[in-house]
Image 1 (spheres, helix red, strand yellow):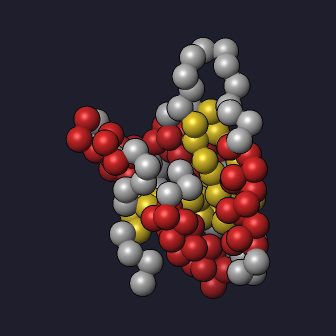
Image 2 (tube, rainbow, N blue to C red):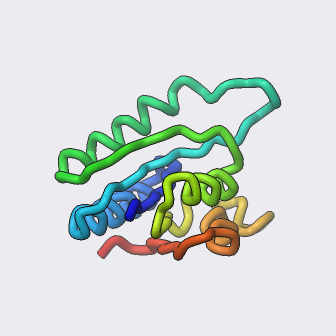
Length: 130
């Protein structure tokens, strides 16, 4: 089974990635770490700074002995996570409860809530990594 973890590089997302990674390591599974970028306009490419940040986070997890693959996705985060879970045949999605886009909660519901509603697999929302 693959565990899919979404990150927005917030402190809570890093804690959720650690939890997901330790679960994957304990189960002999692979962690697939993704960062989804909302496209600002049709036909534009992801910001070049996203890939190095994701590689840094994946490297941090690899130093913990976790088998990690990573990918930058160019779509609305909740939609990207649901599609990616199906594509990689994930058995679980792990997300932080609130990240950089906390204001979205008041406007549209959080990314974690929207993902949980639409996901084809269980979603673990990490509020505290302890």
